[in-house]
Length: 299
Image (tube, rainbow, N blue to C red; front, top):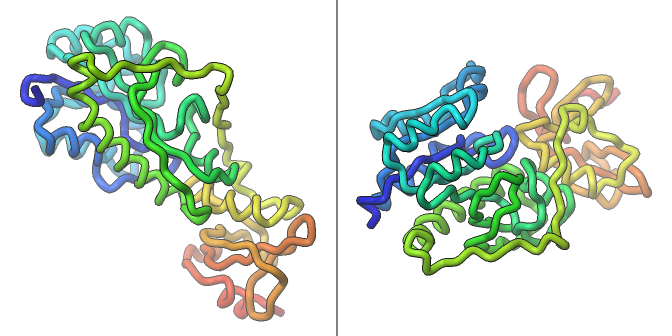
């Protein structure tokens, strides 16, 4: 069935803000398992404003002679979907709501890979929110896409146990890999109808929160454990910034400390707690450990 099934992939596979994937794991997994991906649909805005480099999913698509569509609106490609004879769509971090007319253009609809245990953390920042909330577990849901945001019935879920030390980059990589494995495993049963989606429990719905650049400024009126989670959740974007010795730095690694120990760069925080800055990016742009920065700037 893999050879005959025609798939269109929506999205850039960047499941968290600022995440830089190594290639396009989901697209590559579909190709490696013999599925015929007839097009990739990426966000027109992202593809045309990222001056630093091309979207990874575009590069992998072009390497495999897969057309890349960059519509301003998803509805603009309904004719393309029909002309390509696509059977099913797969969506991973597309960044726009898909109208019902586009969903219905696929005989088997669209599958959304969502990095949370739905109905928990609907929305665009479920990975960051799981870290910020200190969750003990998260996971991936394969969901039947509907017009309402992340509200469709769920085909499959897999749970990931969290250690409390994961960075956003590390957790995203883990969930992208898991989602890719789930998709290639479940696609045959979804297509033949033997895997039925189950409705979400609407009484248990929670939403992830939008993140702004301003939230990256470390607020020492908060407890150290909250700030440590922020450093991990805000890695890559919006980044955790702090004023230390009159210099604005980016904190890239931190931990909760028991006290303001000698030789360590420690910030006093709420509730008599302490945050040790283990690694930072200095104003020069150089990455240094906290102790070296302290020795260099301490008066």
